[in-house]
Image (tube, rainbow, N blue to C red; front, side):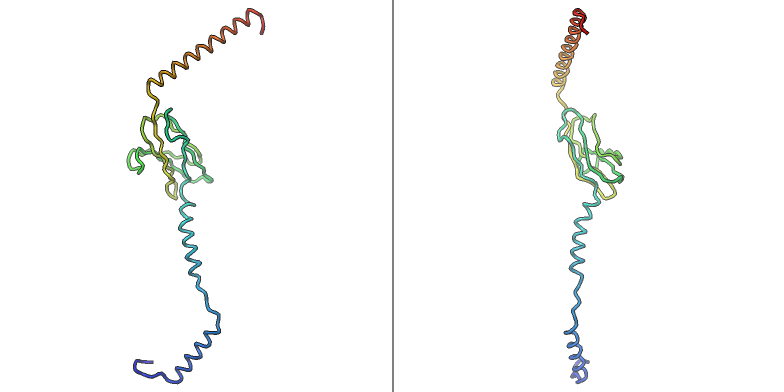
Length: 171
């Protein structure tokens, strides 16, 4: 049909037949809603399945100068542990390969804040921060002196006990 022309009788009857046939046929359902749900689930599940395992620390403040970082992994994916003095990991970056391991003990650090994360093929894990704040020198000297005194008492008790045992003849 063109513009300005009236429909012919044959055209109208063909249109009616076509619409009658369509009304009796089952309608096709679109799979688009199902596809949308699958895509949405995939977007939310995909990062969690392929990101590095969550990282934890046994301490948030280390006054002894050492702490343990741990994680759980079910495979032998290549893992790299990163340490930095800032949370963006842009400066002072140190890295260690920790493939196959589930924990890492860190020691020998100076006072300050340190940030850690795991990296694998899927991305980075959460960031863990640990503050290293060593005991003061006075406190360390006190602990050393206390330990030396207790060690002296222990040696004295052992030597006195040995002399007493030798005098009485008991073995």
